[in-house]
Length: 238
Ligand code: HPA
Image (cartoon, rainbow, N blue to C red; front, side, top):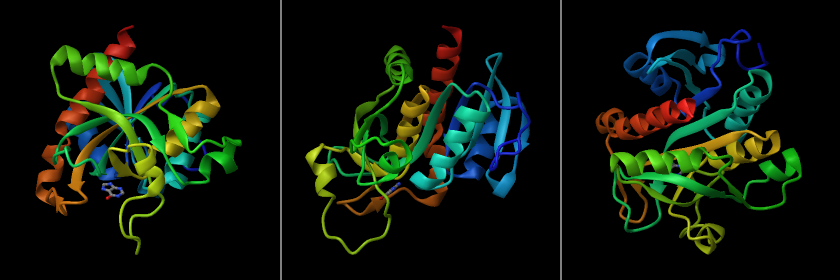
């Protein structure tokens, strides 16, 4: 047991898919894993462990924002011997060429957040994905001919604001889109010497003010979940 996760030692697999929303984690566990078992429900941040293609995988929730994913990913890495976390989330597109439902593999996270500095003394505002799982995602998507964009994204600390236009820091680094968690996940993985990647589905086009509807959401996320699971399968074979 850790402070925020009540699973017993050994109940969480070395590879974890981490969604922001606990109900999405529950849906993925029930639809894609065989023999899924609820291993933690502290604060309703659900974690399940089950089998995918004969391998143990866990799927759980990170909550929203860097502080929240910072807590869950750190406890997974340091108290449950987790080796790899693949975040599966949604993002708002900055790049006008992106369409709703497009998939992004995050090369690096760009942020104004002080998380990495205060936690680990990491001064950079750009942190790369960690380990080789980003490359494995690219390999798997290429093999299957599943379309995938790669690039920098903006990990923002704010969802609502009175600011006009996109973040200058994000524009300076050609960020494709905005979400709120990758920077802390990558910072923790870097500090702990672990692997981390992030897959994002475009759920809204910020300039065009379009978004996918709540009814479309569950289905929209399926290609991302499939790619994450196939990547997990591939990397656990190696
Ligand atoms: N901002 C931050 N995070 C997001 C957004 C957004 O517009 N859309 C989906 N995740």
